Length: 341
Image 1 (cartoon, helix red, strand yellow):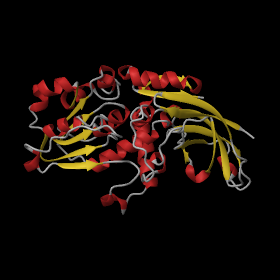
Image 2: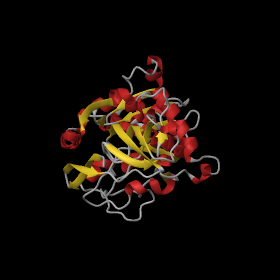
Image 3: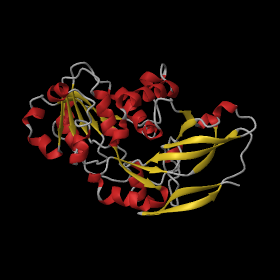
Image 4: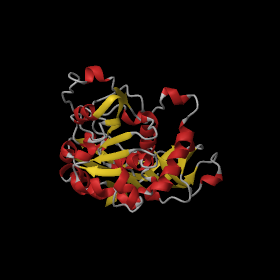
């Protein structure tokens, strides 16, 4: 029987690689050998730090039954190595994406696999779930021609969301992050024209945002994305949103809590707070959109953005503890961290 090296979160700030015996391959299953998998610096750090709610009734399988010891992750790219007797031979050696925990091998049915376009590298494909999240955030926020848009947080999801927002004819797009590396990542990516950046896009720290006349000259923002992972940022979002504006909350705070100021101007502002999570499609679109259609848009977005340039660190699975320690203690040095197998 084949074995798999699988990462487990065993207790707060402790990870362990365990050798798991894989079950016998069933007739309708395939064996996938992992090439790379991406760490979600937001969600996985909640698991690593024991800041996640211990759920048993979540709406998606990835977030349900979260208790130590826990194999977790959802950005796995690999190659199909073995086929069950009933599986179409076209799957052999196909490059695929799967919402799987970090593991060297796994067995699954083909309906759980997403073929990767030939034009994309495995490491670009690792960004698939975060890009789908960005697509979902854009659809939930529904930017309008000429709007003023603010993105709080320039981690991977923030960068991908900002990349898609820059394709819209907005009046202004302000990007905020306290880490210089992330704040400059999009501006220095070489993807955007310099003149577009000068007139349309500006990267600020949270401190600069509050004192920068450019930001406040816009008479506040029509649309704000809260993607920092910090519930305290909600107060900044509320303060900076104009009358009848929208705040899209894409952060998952886990068990982190903070006081939110819903007094003062908020009471009369008619601001809309929109919770956004990628496991579902907003009801207004679900009659016309399904997962397959959103997946296709996501692959096309990855082709345009090419986010592999934002991989700052690559670790072997055996060095997983170093990867999580880096993200925990020195996040300012990182954007995307991945495992290679």
